Image (cartoon, rainbow, N blue to C red; front, top):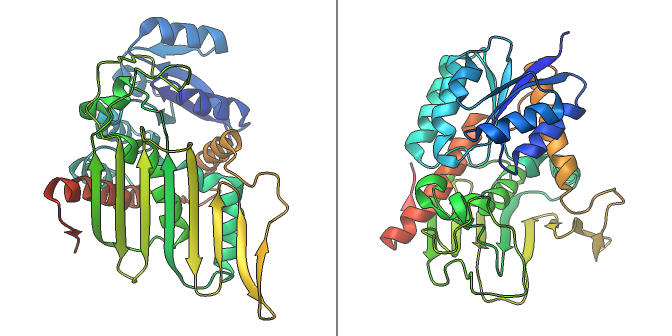
Amino acid sequence: MSRIKVGVIGLGSISEMHIQGYLRNPDAELIAVTDMNEDRARKKAEELNIPHYYTDYHEMLRNKEVDAVSICTWNNTHAEIAIAALEAGKNVLIEKPLCRTMEEARSIEACAKRYPNQFLQIGYVRRFGTNTQVLKRFIDNGELGDIYYSKASCLRVLGNPGGWFADKERSGGGPLIDIGVHVIDLCWYLMGKPKVKSVSGNTYHKLGNRSNVEFKSFYKAADYDAKQNTVEDLANALIRFDNGASLLVDVSFSLYAKKEEVRVSLHGNKGGAEIEPALEIFTEKNNIMLNSTPQIDHLTFDFENGFQNEINHFIACIQGKEQNIAPVEDGVEIMKILTGVYESSKQQTEIHFD
């Protein structure tokens, strides 16, 4: 079978993980890149001997050599590019989040259904981490039993990236839609993807981007502007599912707290587990409470390996070798949760879904 020829749209920081993933996959061939900044697109093409570079993604999609694309652009462009790519006959990998709104999510889903011969995957990269894959094996074998509760925190003391991340029009929101989507999806996926029943959430705009803080570094977007910020600092939510399970979550870009923290746990009627900051499984044997630590290479999320696994899965699915574990339907359900939190905070009431 010939190699899958791929183009990457958007050359911001996250695109490098996609690019390196394709370069390391023997069944993929990176033949095109696109970025609004022509100089950046040209330099990347020259650096990696990529034959085609563009400033307009429509031009890339007209290239009949391109079999598949990674969309690594601002969130407000995900829907239009994904739909255009599907209509052009391309397979699509969309960076998380799927988009910004439920309307956009439904549009992508409808388009994907119109083109069943094209393949669409969402970049929920934590599904591909070693710790996730190991814990899922335990869950699938019934070790935790019926998972009825999970809890996720992803808290930054200082970590508003600024730029487009801090511009609600382009991003759709702040920490909830940027980093919260990772831990929410991780819990939901491991809980068996139950249908969301209701969301009660809060968002807070209290601290801004805290650009006044000195002697503590943090990631800044390429278009960082200390004066610009229209997204929340903190979001929290209680999410209820139709099987009676619940998920409690809080995420922040900026918060007066002791330290940055990522902590994710799941709890069932036979056992529990903490997957971040390190995988540990809690059970009961012989009337004794027992904590077990798997002997694996990566107990916490292995960023580079996770992205490589995600890219490998995308290519394998296109080839028909694997079944998609991150389809568009999952993206729609996660967007229902994210937009539900924002709407609940706006209305100051619980949001219910049919």
